[in-house]
Image (cartoon, rainbow, N blue to C red):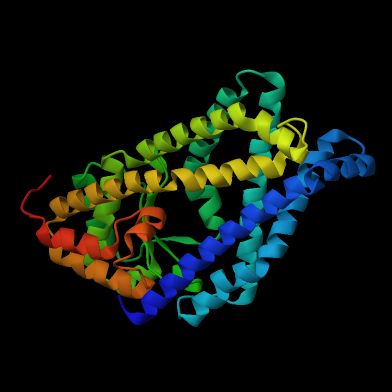
Length: 369
């Protein structure tokens, strides 16, 4: 790894730890200082109807977090990216994306918190099972809607103009028995110099997307082997498997909340988990449980990525193109090629590039599917 990539990676890891610690401290203070319990009462006296309390309280919590974390967020996602030559986005575009992201997270959080409060009130014994099922269903819907609703909020699709490359990609998908709607270019260069490609959507609406930053710098063989990896995920049914893993995590998290909430509510001076005042406590559960399970989820994901690499190598027989594409991606994205084992354990849902390249060199590419 180059000195620039090493420096960039160290800063990113440090900022991630600081951001998580800051969030946990704020959630703890909200519960321990009594503000979490007092603020809903203030809102009810000001606005009257209790159904207003949750959206207003949640909006206030999001606004406080955004303002408190803004210096860190601005440095991490704007200044740092420009400092290392990775961003092409101006401050106006960056702020617009921030507002859209904040709005989406707010809407998703409001939906799930409303469902949680309804489930607790309606099913006092089995609410954890009900809200877990709702959580899984919402995540499946989002996975289906993301390509056609969410991604276009940030990027524009255009049908891939290079007919020869488009034909090769569609032929590869057919060879690997993966149904695709079509191949699209996505205008990543408006915001970043980083490169990426993927397969978005389900069923007949599944589409191949290739960043224009990839199209401009990579050979057809390299693009093909990168997309073979993405097609392998589909052929191996990795998305449903990851959704299943996340579903199990959701059930475990909500059961843990059900089993331990009475104690933590009493410690925090709160009455019920289905009270707006308990929102900081609910978020603390999500953050802490996410931190505790992230290494295990990453391990499952890394194994899936390794299997997808193997299938891509077998499907294309292009170990050389695979290795050169990984080398380019590492340089272009300033990737940490050989992280410390603890960093890999906690942060990496893909094998580090150094491991992927070494694996490709060891793997025979004579077998075809």
